[in-house]
Length: 383
Image (cartoon, rainbow, N blue to C red; front, side, top):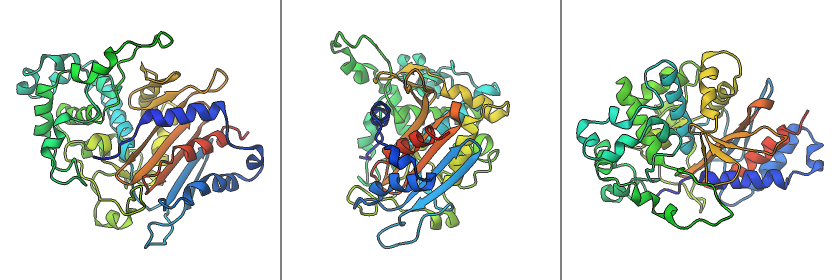
């Protein structure tokens, strides 16, 4: 199966980093470019990594940095036109579309999923009436990370989602029992941890959310993406399906052994994992997410960053898709999402109050979380 992202791995790394910073004062004395170069070099020196694209926002300044090469056989440097598969970051695009549809009155967070499912599915499983769009967006639906029946559709182990269709998803929902995914939580909790949470990270939940938004609007996910995000923000390279020119500019992914990985298909689960993008496109997206003005996109997306549910980790909450990590009483929280899917790794982190953000894109499975976190710490230390 696909090696999928563990959001709490990022958060744990982040939390420990800000308690025990690893960036030295000596590094901070150089220019910003020199410091970023130092931070990225350990990652690039690994045997299983190739290209790296880093974007930063620091107030009104926006900069891009590119490192490495596209593959062992292609020594070309990645550039602003290089397209990466952004995997799990697709989730915050889906929840941003949800926020836009709530803002214009098309749907409500409190809508149950049975309002948009076929009657045959909705009536087959009474539990589905308890799941709302909000629960899908906050990973509180009780749905598992992946549907249990995906193995029944497997034709190619290197492309496990390719033969999983909406009809298979419907069959899963008709038979799903929440006890299957909550059994572990019934174990006796330690006294020192009195917190309870219904958080359960789910690719399936966000995939279902994207599909239900299609049903609610009678538009495809690609059309919703264009209408509410990529067209208003002029993001032409953020797509589910790449055209010929974009395919030529796409960096090939690499597995943990450094070999080129198999390209993945997302027949029914595209709204959780399926997007491709470039560094310039993502910088525009993050700028809009941080926009504190009254411009429509920035205003309606702000609520996606509000803590909705506590996660399994102390001082970490989930909003609508995004994660909110506290940085101590004296520092504003970091809003973040990252992922590692199909031979690519990526990171987005930003602090709205300081108007600082970091995006890191890699065409290797080796995680880039620490690279992004280190750079974000530097940006927040620069006056």
